[in-house]
Length: 265
Image 1 (tube, helix red, strand yellow):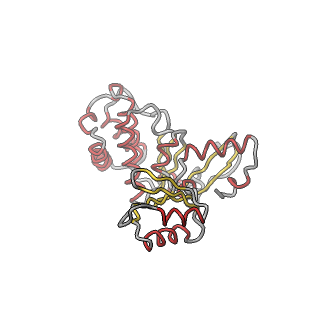
Image 2: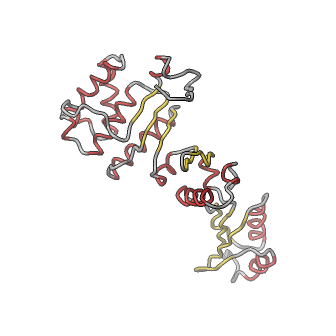
Image 3: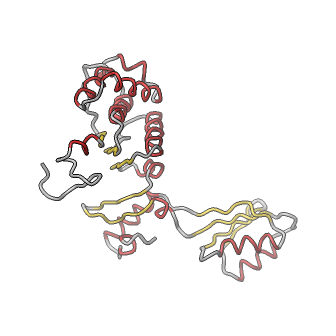
């Protein structure tokens, strides 16, 4: 029973509405499995507890197990499984009842690279099919590949909440320009120097770093083309979630963090 506060899931208190509980599945950091039972027997017990038809639950589980290359192992007792195999079975059990919301706590803790990739691909497919995922994790590199929105808690307080795209955005764009039909970059260099735009030339490619305001990056690309140069690439210089997290926690420890709290970067 909660000490205080309220949680609302799909318009209902999940502790008071059985229909709400049925829409939610969870995968905890420590796998909750019956070690002496086989994978299939674990699925049978779970289907009974959740009020599912055993045959349908096993059929769904086997399909997920095929994605994880785990179907042959379902006949063996769980105590013989590796950490990665147990985590895959936990994810399979969570998906068997077709939840609308999947809650995961440190899903990649202690598992091998192949299991990590398999679980990520399955979660992305679940999300693509309309499911919602809530993950708590310290594995920021993995979250960068999975999350649409990120919330950061520091010392028990929410210090940041925003879309993952806005987190990565720096406002800086890298413009790579080739010589095209020109012998050198002198004309374009003259323009960049006049605009105080930093650049360097490596292997006949000019690389400029532009802080985009309005359509400034497009204007630069247009001028380069008009002068006879070739645009090779334009892409935003992104900040990693790990780097952003470190910046935020440093701000929280000493400096002014209002911009982070308001979602401004």
